Image (tube, rainbow, N blue to C red; front, side, top):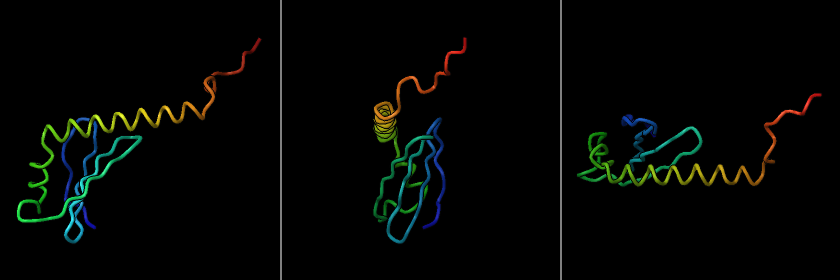
Length: 92
């Protein structure tokens, strides 16, 4: 697998990988990541093709999915970590 390149985005790191007959587009934030895999064909082979694929509609859906994933992760942590863990003991 090799990195074909990166797509610009304000807060997502978008990396495009190529391996044999497959392109992978990975979207990352600090706390989660999601990847989509596509078969290469006459219309999908290069970083330019992927840039056309990752249009505003697709990006909006990914942004919503990532926000939901981050919220789900935070909710899971909240169920496991006590609420007042970050507070210091009271010193008199």
